[in-house]
Amino acid sequence: MDYGIGCISVYDPVDMMPYRDLPITEQTRFKKLGKEMKAEFKWLAASLTMEYWNENRQIPFGEEMSKLRTRFLRMFAEEYSILLKDDTELKNYLLTLVISTINKQLKSEKEKQT
Image 1 (cartoon, rainbow, N blue to C red):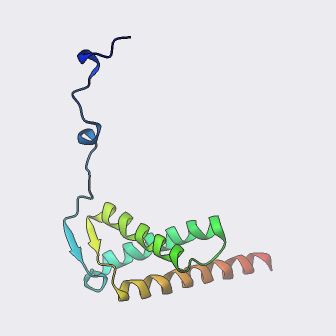
Image 2 (cartoon, rainbow, N blue to C red):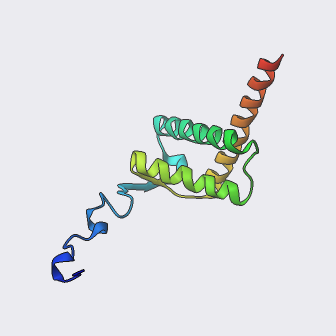
């Protein structure tokens, strides 16, 4: 077998990827988002929370909540090109949202059983 110069590719696979980092156009705090963007964020967080709930059947806490929050922020940044700062207000909002989403799901499951 000949692995000479003819077998070397001139293309770098990393350069061929659509982008290396997130194409962020804006970085802001959650409280400075508009009403529509907050609604989109809430919808995204609720759907990802339900996905987590259906897989694990437990409320995310500690490290799991941190991973979930990072996933929320990354997906929101990819979808809307807005990077939210991971501050205390956002952490508290997400924790409240996750708990209320799971409670609503439990309530609807309980109503289906009766």
